[in-house]
Image 1 (cartoon, protein in one colour):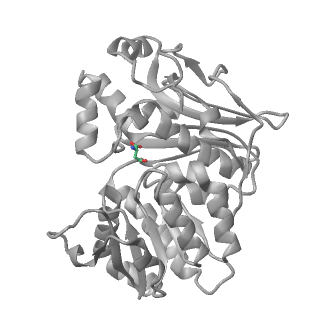
Image 2 (spheres, helix red, strand yellow; image 1 turned 90 degrees about the vertical axis):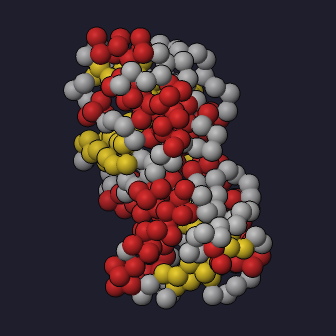
Image 3 (cartoon, helix red, strand yellow; image 1 turned 90 degrees about the horizontal axis):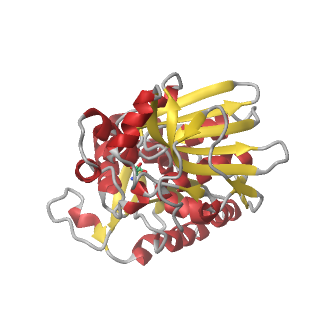
Length: 353
Ligand code: HSE
C-alpha cells in the first residue's frame, strides 16, 4: 500500500479521494493500493471521511519518510511551487493538476525531479481528463509536431455553448459553470483566456521542448463576446470558439495565440461543446489527430491525477525518465490568419498577463 499526501482539498483534491475510493479494487490490482495519509488544507473537513487526516503544516508531510508521493492540487503559484520543489528535493514524486505552476515553473521543477531521481507529472494540468500529456510525450514522439490547435478551457466552452443553445447571458452561464466546479477560483483566468494560455504553453513545451512564457502570448478571452458575435459565426457556417494555438515555423520560431475564433463547421473543433475540450495535433508523418474529453470538473480531472500517481508507484525502484524544458525566447505572438480559421476581429485588447 503506497501512502500519499494531498495538498489542497478543493474540487480536484476531493475528487481524487473519491476516485481512489471508487476504484480501489482496480488500483489494488495494478499497484497494490493507495492510501491517503494526509490532506493539507487551511480548512477543516469534519464531515468528510478523511477529516481526521487533515494537517495544516506542510513539514509534517515533507518529513514523513512513508510519503513517497505528493499530489499538489492547491491552485495558484505560491505556496504550491515552493511545496512542490521541497517535495522533489527530498526525493518524493510530485503529481499536479496546477497548470499555473507548470506553465510558470515547469523547467525548474522538471530539473529538480531529474536531479533527485524522481518525477514531476502533470497529466491533469491540460484538458482535465483527456490523456493528452502522455499521448504527446510518448505516443507522438516519433513525429515532428507542426501545429497544435485546441479548445483548452471547459468554462469558456461551456459558456459559449450555453449562450448559443439556450440564449443565456455570459454571467448566467458563468454562474452555472461555477456551480458545476468548472471555473477557476478567480474566473477571470477562464474568461480572459489566461488559463487556456497556460495550457497551450504546456503543450507547446512538450511538442517543441521549450517553454514559452505565457506573458509573451497574445491572449484575448471571451469577456466581450456577445450573442451577436455568436450568430455572426452561425451566418458564416462557423462556430465561435476560444482557440489556443501553437505553430512551429520553418525558421524554428514558435508562433502562439489565444483568441475567440470563427471555426468553420467542417473543422472537428467546431463540434466540441459544453465542458468538453479537444486538442487537434498535426504531426509531420501522422497528419492530424484529435484528443477529446471532459476538460474540467472534479472526477475527470482527478482521474488524470490518479493515473500519474499509479505511474509513479509502478516506476518506484526504476530509473525514472523525466523530460526537461528550456525556456524559449524565440516566439512570435500572433493572431491566427491562415486557412484554419477566420479570426473574429479583436474584441477588446489582449490582456496584460
Ligand atoms: N477552469 C478550468 C477550465 C479548469 O474551465 O478548463 C480545468 O483546468
